[in-house]
Amino acid sequence: MEEGSETEKRGWMKTKTALMEEMKRMSTIAAPMVVAIVLQYLLQVIPVVMVGHLGQLSLSSVAIAISITNVSGFSVFSGLAGGLETLCGQAFGAEQYEKFGLYTYTAVISLTMVSAPISVLWIFLDKVLILLGQDPTISLEARKYAIWLIPALFGSAILKPLTRFFQTQSLIFPLLLSSSLVLCFHIVTCWSLVFKLGLGHVGAAIAFSLSTWFNAILLLSFVKYSSACEKTRIPFSKKAFHSIGEFFRFAVPSAAMICLKWWACELLVLLAGLFPNPKLETSVLSICLTISTLHFTIPYGLGAVASTRVSNELGAGNPKAARLAVSAAMVLAVTEALIVSATLFGCRYILGYAYSNDSMVVHYLAVMTPLLCLSVFMDSLQAPLSGVARGSGWQHVGAYVNLGAFYLVGIPIGAVLGFVVHFRAKGLWIGIVSGSIVQSIFLCLITAFTNWKKQAVMARERIFDATSSDENGANHITGASC
Image (tube, rainbow, N blue to C red; front, side, top):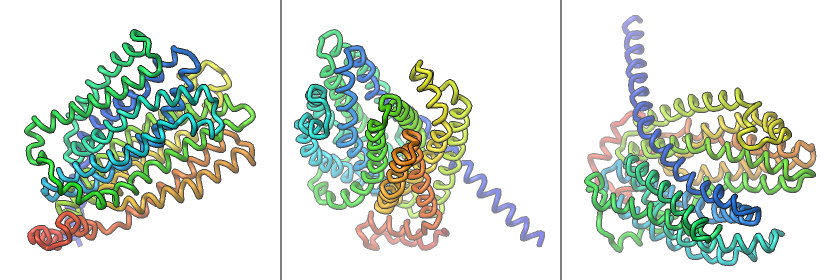
């Protein structure tokens, strides 16, 4: 009895030590990743701040253009590039560096192909907005802004895969350095084009396009000249075209996971404009969405690291290590969620003053803060779980979860509470929270019942083209414990 108890104790201590080491490792990668994501997020905030000094027409047209181009373009690219978190992450773990490089080329080719139809949509954006009931003058100015963002779209077709290229190797320093340099470049360029050269809101769009390409060039230079990329830096090959179908099999559901919730939030903000006092309701919802989006950079960074660790370990045939990475990510996520939620709740009566001096807005936001805290907590859980899904390769399951959570639960509940029960913006946000809760519960259940040994076998078969050519890897998986 005592000997068995002592063995269990040693086993528990060993697991605890391994978990702490994994948490430390993930934190070291996640911290700079979060900073890099925040810096990239600020690239879209700066044009709005500067254009806001040009008048209401410029501000409103840019706000609409940014919202539409994010929904129809940049968010789609972020999601599609998530397919590399499965393919490149597992290839790197399996030490198949040639395939790693080929998958990156495939992603660039695929996103460039997708850029063309999106560009056509942006060219005719004014007609689309007028059909949706928007003011013709604002629609025309929004179109001008969107047209000058088309170069940024093609730049993103290179930048998004490059970001995953570094992320899946846990090379975060190049991303942090490039994001810092690009932000400084963007501030100077945007100010010069908008105010000094008098290009107005069009200058802000040009600055964003230039900054996107500058970022891509910096990362390409690092790939070409850094010894850290020596193994994964391969010459271009026609073989990259052969994997386009395989890439889209993971990229499309990955994009659906990201875009379905994003679009649901945008839809609810638009619905807020139908309430009796649309300015107040839309303002409060927009503030909540801004706070939620800014916070999401933290769990999203953690999710990116979780995706990398899980995909690398599955590709290497280490299911036990993959499961440990999931546990470490969830412990960090819960800790972060409790800290941020408690801080927001404690500041609920003064939080509104950061955005407005209107007492009605401040009071309304104080009422909404408990719901915002719950939303933040759910985001902190689902982001790393979504990262695990991308790293494992079951994005299609996550896409179905998000579709059901937000379009069968979240939006209907929000619409009923907002318009029928007359909770207005509060009701709409309860809908978002309800969808997030359903999403987190299902993702937790799917992750908890995942057979990691089977996932590792599938990863190895995928990387080695479903052959048994890697005999040692197969033996390693068979002998690994789950």
